Length: 84
Image (cartoon, rainbow, N blue to C red; front, side, top):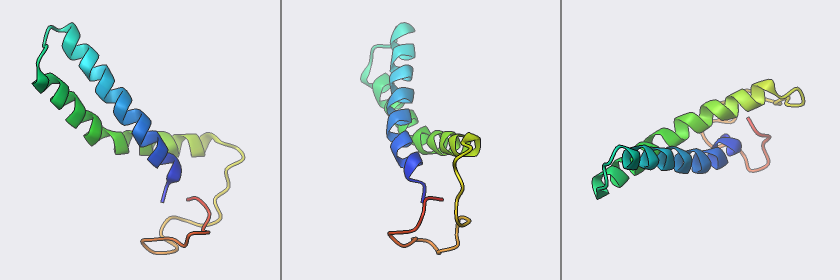
């Protein structure tokens, strides 16, 4: 469970979709299909990009010391478990 990636996915999804809408409009494609395609691509790439950024942030943080490895608690960790 990576809470930082959950927050970053909301930011990255909107940023990716917004950038694609700007690109499509710059190329003269002013249709609802362009907006829908940008939204679908933004939703599909939000989680993977946020996960990569989250891992990179945690890897470069000298104060980050996880107490356990991912998967030690099973699929759903306890509520008071430390961040992975």
